[in-house]
Image 1 (spheres, rainbow, N blue to C red):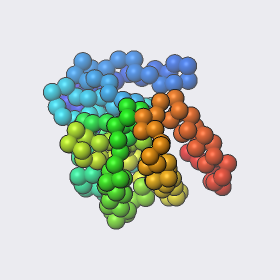
Image 2: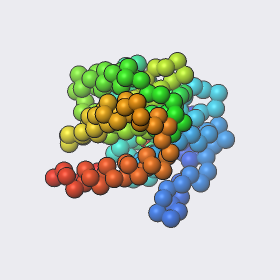
Image 3: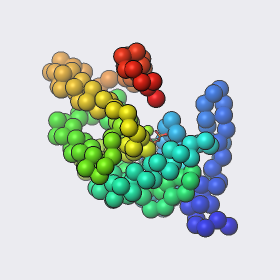
Image 4: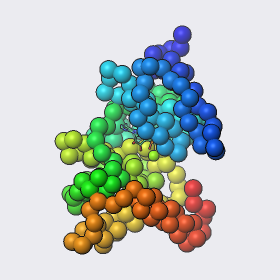
Length: 210
Ligand SMILES: Nc1ncnc2c1ncn2[C@@H]1O[C@H](COP(=O)(O)OP(=O)(O)O)[C@@H](O)[C@H]1O
Ligand SMILES: [Mg+2]
């Protein structure tokens, strides 16, 4: 037996590598796979309003960094609260809602006020001594009540300047707000745009982009 039930949950998760991608092979029946990212798989915990972010093998540094960053954010309401952690997992609030990516894909409008709220949340992180980075459409969630939450703060402690949010904001005001701009955008177009954006950044910034 591990030190906590969450520890046992995390230990139940088995990853495998298939076609150069990491996949979840099995996990406790009390966990339900909810989302995956570059560094972890996220599970909804049965009968709790919490998720468990289980990091892939070799992503322990990311896990530790993300925990430290959440500590600095100190339970601020723009971010999920963290309840338990180990070197390979975090247990935090389940933020039920739609990511900005899903909003665009499904044609749910993103209002200027939402952008301002994200700005406020990021300003709070800056005041807490962090350097908000890796802000993209998958890490911003609008809840059923219309509140904005920011997730995935692992890269908030990197030193490199990240212009991603400023670029997104500019695109929002320049294109999205234009009356003729489609409010519903097919996913493949968004994936293509984000690929082109990364390529563009790769060739226009001197540091290697991560
Ligand atoms: N606290 C949360 N509440 C609800 N969904 C979440 C939460 N954390 C992560 N997710 C979902 O899981 C996905 C992957 O999580 P994320 O933290 O972004 O992992 P990574 O660090 O690998 O990018 C997110 O895009 C989101 O859809
Ligand atoms: Mg992410």
